[in-house]
Image (cartoon, rainbow, N blue to C red; front, side, top):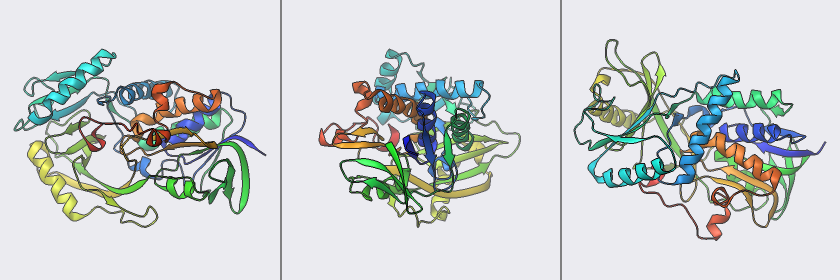
Length: 385
């Protein structure tokens, strides 16, 4: 059987794309994964959802994703989405940029404001030293990355979509100008369109037929801590640009805590990297965490681990078809933004594939922006957005 579309990778981006392709009534859609849904970087994501971006496209995509996750939850699917609000602690050096961002965001209808530390909801548990202001976004929050991805896969299957887990794709079929399917178990499965949503493995898949992939695969570490009883804790996620860390609640007084930009990134082989966190990293995170949030002093370390980021040259994903490559679409390069953008990316990419076109703003995410010298530029640097 020839498929209308094959989506390779059942992380959050691939799962959402497959779901929206099927929702648009694409006849035969196949979703493949080398393991199970969210088994790669998605499942280890902190899954923080915030619209505070310096680019209107990313902000609008996140707003759209919030609505999609809400609708999926209301339809009875478990996503773990919690609209708790989002806070970012800003140093003096970033204050001007934060004000400009807030002006842009409010101008496009996103609720956000700049607060004094003392009057903010973080005042009772955050050390105000070095914090010039707090960005507050009431519609921000977080989700459960595994449950949310499974929700898209289950919704996709409920519409008649076909999912095959533990089915590695060995290569694309075709050449650098036309893709006609994928190779599984030495056999060719044909498709009108193949969506490469395989995250850190996207490069090897595309390069199997000579499609250029400017992809970095870097190791990303996180820790999990449990706060002692009787102490006030954040209800929702908090990023601190002062200390370059972020945290978000897991429930039961537990929090995932990681490092934000600026930091060193270590390029690795996605099939061969250290999956446990470095002790130096754990110690560094704990020192920063206890300084900024004294309520974490004496917290119990529950877990620490490493996963992967698939990173593009400008830290924005590559999404959509390419000029001069028929039957192929990119959907990779989350660069740390992937989870919050993915539901909206999945919907818009499905529209692009089925309708044969998309608006110019979203089209800019295409890999073609490299040849057009039209890369994204961010106010804060790295994957801060």
